[in-house]
Amino acid sequence: MITPLNFKTDYKLYKQFLKTNSKRIGESLEKKVTIVPTSKKLCRKNGIQQEANNSINTADYIQAVYLMMKKKGYKIPNLYIDEAQLPRKYNLSGLQTGNWNIFGPGRLEISSPSLVIHEVGHYLHNKNMAYNQALYAMFNTFRGIFRPHLNKTEKRILTEDFKRAYQSGYFNDLELNKCLEKGYIDKETLNKFYKTPEKFLVKNAFTDVDEFIAEYFTLAAQGFKFSPEITKRYQAFHGPEIKQQITKEDINNLVKYRNKLEKRNVLLV
Image (tube, rainbow, N blue to C red; front, side, top):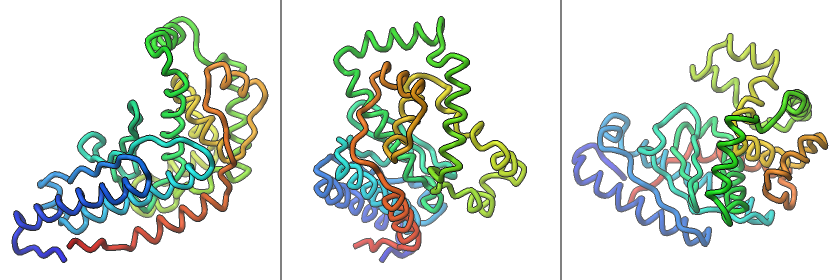
């Protein structure tokens, strides 16, 4: 167990522990997994034990989401846990690049499984477009300047779809009340969300083609049926094929596992 007596020795042990666990988690996924140590500054501030918990518990949590998606028939990218590339926020943060998903640990107790599914959606979409990335990039630029990826009618329909998805419980893993308790959001913002949740949930999909695809995939993978106009647009942009449905039970099991990890102190040996 880590003690505060010798920070230099403890930090060295911490780094070795993460290296060992990177290999262990990677083998179980049949994918490469890298866990980068948190900076010495944060380790001194929060304690090495807490930072080890953040890194390992987050990696184990994402691993569980990955394995669930793998069983559903989806290909998954390599996993990279690095707080330096994605500075800590109140929530788990993710980024897709090439064959890797990069995640910053964030706060596990309010981290949504849907965020991991979203990033895998980006990865699968990029794989679909890999045959001509340069042409796809030019296409996106052209559309961004001269023609939005969604017209006014499609945006209205998509907003109604998100409203229907929320009312049907497809966002049941949102931990909004916990965010309020922890001070991550204020009550006014929470009240605005509950009044018109679809306006908050749909913003990402309006940003660009890639975000629209990932947002669609996240819900469709869980069995939500979008309107025909939206599905047609998704298919036109070569959105990933939807495999076996991720059920509400799957999501609930991940939330339970996350809650269990939140209380776990990893043993540094």
